[in-house]
Amino acid sequence: MRKTRFQFAAAACTAALLAAAPAVAADNYPSRPVRVIVPQSPAGSTDVATRIVTDRLGEALKQNFVVDNRPGAGSLTGTDLVAKSAPDGYTLLGIAASFTITPAMHRDMPFDPVRDFLPITQLADLPHILVVHPSLPVKSVPELVTLLKSKPGQITCAFSGVGTSTHLATELFQYLSGTKMLLVPYKGGSPAMTALLGGEVQVNFSASSTSLPHIRAGKLRALAVTGAKRSIATPDLPTLAESGVKGYQHASWVGLLAPAKTPQPIIKLLHAESVKILARKDVKELYLKRGMETEGDSPEEFAAAIRSEVDKWKKLVASAGIKPR
Image (cartoon, rainbow, N blue to C red; front, side, top):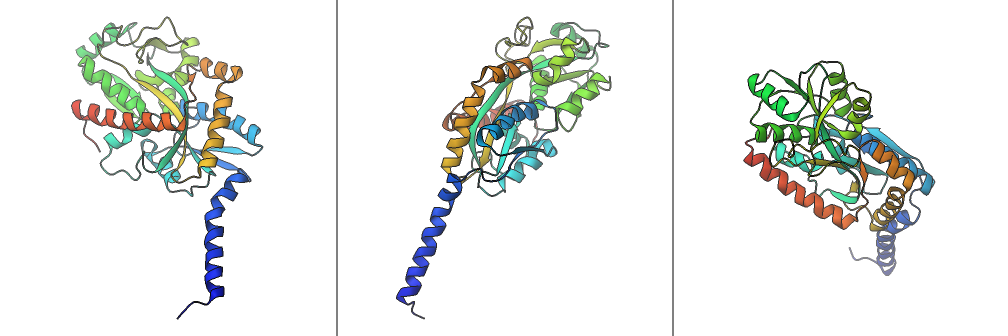
């Protein structure tokens, strides 16, 4: 059946309205609360770093930014939820470096970290700290390595889920030091820290934001940081490479992302406001107090870093002989 001139005009008008809808939505953004999924447990480094920024995003944009913790499956559960959310700016992702590790650790990924997300900005950079329970009779990395080699597979080490940054930090240490521990997974950095403080486990590669308060209180013993250089927050603490584990270098980060196809005006707005927040002195001090340093790179720089890390971890996992699940 042939369309009338009126039907053609109506169809054209509808198409124009649909095409304009994202732009209109972006102009009014945010007109309702924004949910920020953190696929890890509350009080961990990813949660803390995200909340510091999203609380202030809410103030700047005069709308609630509500953090929703969805731990599980090594961050896969919550991350996949965001990947499949509407790309309208009302569901965002606060994620850690494990985001780039999971493709190397899992055979069947429910999402693609490059294809299914648009990076907004990296919020924080933070090393892990190798900490031990005070009952463990070691005060340095060489002493720990000696003990582990004398008791292979007997010393327990907590980590925050398979494929997370703390997991890879632990595996990299074992690989380079020639040691073997009994690895115990937990659903996030906070539960792993609780287990360490309670003496259920003896070793942990913890995010600095999680472990620093307990180190300062004398409840844990810090042996080294995992980064390429000493941390501003703990300048007297040596790196693992300095301590004899040659070639060791690993640091985590926290970043803010949106589902793919989120309108660019929304990405640009969130980036601009986040970078302003990260440049504030009070925010820098809050981060540093927790062993983190603020970042604030561009969406393009963050996207390039994510692609590079995905490739790096795939190569490392293969060379270390770690078998994907």
